Amino acid sequence: MTLNLNDLVRGGTACFSKAGLAEGTNDHTIKTAAPNGAGVDFAINGLSYHKADTDNIAPTVCDEQALGTTCLYVVTLQTDGDVVVTKGNEVDNDDLSGGYAVLDWPTPPAGECPVGAIKVAAGTTAFTVGVDDITDDVGTGTITFYDFFAVPAAPLTS
Image (cartoon, rainbow, N blue to C red):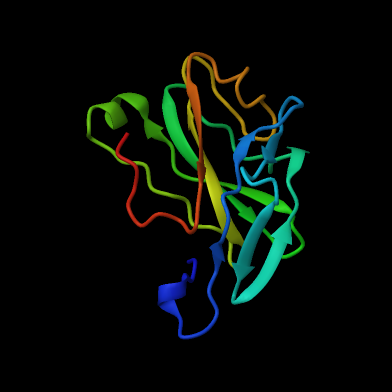
């Protein structure tokens, strides 16, 4: 469980600047490219940290995502600036588009700050974050990047 500012009298974990999550320059990578060019400011348990904009971050290798599914992956920063990617639950694309299922945000690891997420809608091929190229290997699917202050309270419905 992530402790946000409204959960504690002291402390708090939040991202204070837009991370600018995007596909990295090299295959199989992501990057942080804050729109203001100043990097990412964030707090974990009330202590402030900074991560400079970084390209070609090798994301955590996650379990394979089945073809025809959509999945959310939360992107977190550790106190040393290392990036961790945590896979959520896969939802069948037809169930999601038909309104029979929602996408729940994955729970970030304890002691890490969620700065964004990646939504992967796998089309005609399976997909593995950290192994497959973010845009080239998703088949007929789509990739969407999100930047966070904190993990959203409501799931995605599409």
